[in-house]
Image (cartoon, rainbow, N blue to C red; front, side, top):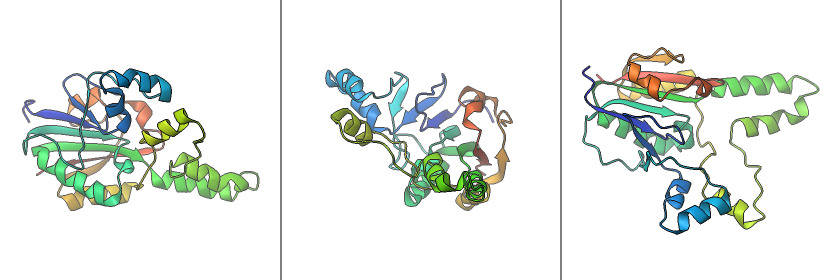
Length: 217
């Protein structure tokens, strides 16, 4: 495919790459961009130092992109932050923005690995008392953050780090196929069909995670 379309990086967090549209929906991004107030609120609540190259964009609601305008879409540790209905809406938008033969590549935490660790802990007499606690913390399904002070409450209000729906390899691959993707496969770091993915994908995203890639027909 000629390298002429948009490369879309959704849920980019603080990871940006030249040549990509780097988008995120974190409430803290909007907060720190407030004229005059943003820098002070950022210091008070300890909010992230968002790079200037990150723009606000909500893939669930839809973006100001033309249909079939993207060569590549990449999402690392983003899809698990969506509820299941929002996940399906996002998948529909991503599929619509991709050109024919465009590629969507996603990395998510591996639910199977988390459950396997829980089972190992549960059957270990020393680890068993904390097995459930560890699962809730490691999966980011639980919330153990304090909310006593104003900065703590602000940090919680504008955080977007809890997970809403978890995936394993089989379920996410099936979601890709159900959306209409072909040549769906489980990926390893660095096995890019398109070398432009090297600009946004990093090896530290892969421990305890799975990556799925599909091509739009």
